[in-house]
Image 1 (tube, rainbow, N blue to C red):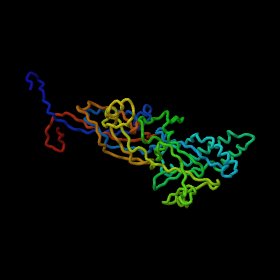
Image 2 (cartoon, rainbow, N blue to C red):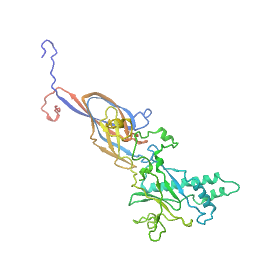
Image 3 (cartoon, rainbow, N blue to C red):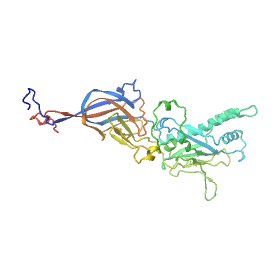
Image 4 (spheres, rainbow, N blue to C red):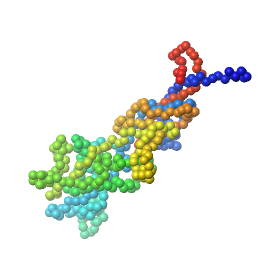
Length: 414
């Protein structure tokens, strides 16, 4: 005691009380005018939370409405060539329309066809149907344009264009899903073709405002590099082939022996065009299985409260060539959240293991800046669907110990 003052000093007993404060945060409660994207916003807490020892994500609910395939992810387009079109003249077929189709395809054997699938989530059968229709429509559009552009009074190309459309356009591509091998097979009933996957290495030049305004991936990727990767194709071009009967040497049609692809086909999913004499089928079997599921995790960042280190894709640059240090990111995120379901659904989960600890305790926290992203840096696209989560704040408060006989309400001493 200091006997020279009327205010005696009470020694610190080093007694503390642990208090847990829970805050429920809803994405729709943000300032939507300032933060229109629910994946990145700042929100003010109802009150100052003082002497914060740690914070942790304890439960959450998110909508599973994500797009596995989207323009922002750059995996909705692929290209192909028809490098060996059926020649009606060589097979003694004197049909003006088939001859005009051959002229169009022969003069564009080095010009890629580009297809763009719709943004969204696909099952394997839907993907096969989408690709087949897109492939055939891309070829039909080029043939119609060729016939109209080259129509003259001395030829009948204008009427041939009408006839071509009345017959349903180009329909020689047949694309199906092998449910046993889990691969999408590409076939054509008469024309040889190449899937030009190497063009995916060139920057996407699609004129799409969504790409310019949206949040694209920020890290280099060596997997999930485009639509062909999701479809089980390699980065190299894939050339279509034909097969022959080893006994007779005649062209042979591929077959799935596990059952019908379409009712009654007995597994023979690709047959030569009966309207084209001596036509043979061409097909491609992908190297790998399809991957239509999308990312398995996304990350939550809370500015100044991140506690998880994250690896980063290796890149050849001055840093990696001149040092043996990693190019990973320290304290890159606050929580890692699994995506356990597919659209359309809502999932609930709890108890994230990582936590942010302060020592000495943080004096006060009032605002949280939140970002929800994938590993590649792209923001998660929640659209208009709200989500919610709960943060647990552990407060570490110094307190003078007061003895009580009621043990049920006595403070925890440390």
